[in-house]
Image 1 (cartoon, rainbow, N blue to C red):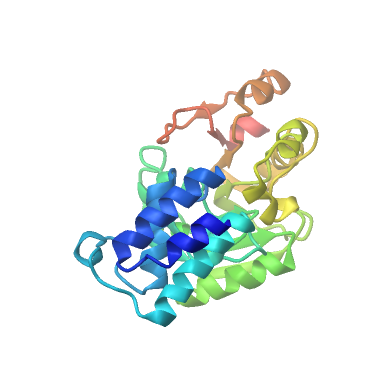
Image 2: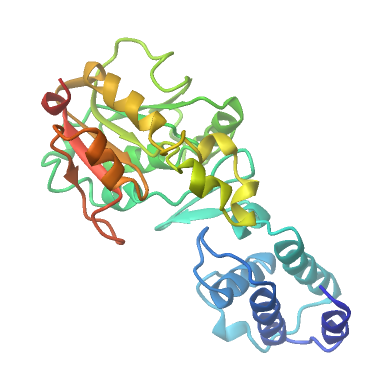
Length: 300
């Protein structure tokens, strides 16, 4: 923050003052918002409420409250880190949300933001008509373990294998799984996609693999550079990991098993590469361009 903003901080008293100050500074710094918040106001409110240990959904009652000296220092510090280091808010608070579920995150894992989460909240209806009959699920590229945890809640009778290439990511996933007391139902596997999996078959395979193409990786905002590179890029067209998943998934699916994969903005490229595959594109909050489904028989 510049000298002018430093002078302004001397006049900050209430939480409302800090909120307006943070929004102004975030806008001036032209921060990128794409890891939970979509604008400077929401991000500033979240960081302030979290830092002061206040309810995240109750800003209004506290706007006229005056933080003490230690709290003021904490607020200025987190605002400064967000601006000067371009650290995403989730890494500053070590917290990310998918619906009502919150997860521990740090820079060992990509910040959770998968559209597959929306589908799991609905138990993949109508594509899965009997959720209680799902007994085995594979979450490929599990990262923080968030989708594996959501799958465990969606399918109460299922055991979930959660695989990832990164041992660091699996350490974070282990912490989240313990937080939700799901150690008996979620098994972590260190594996480069299918390479370390046994011959087990699954009723459902879900995957949010790396899918950013090389051109887009080179143009990512600074905030994304804090995330693990392995979790973002996947070859020149962004489909290297997806190709491997499509090649091998059928042997890991039960007779009526289904595969669900998120691919970002790569629908046109994928359909051009696999013109004979009958992709079913699932509706999520941003449209039907981002997540596909295939049945086992489609992949044979």
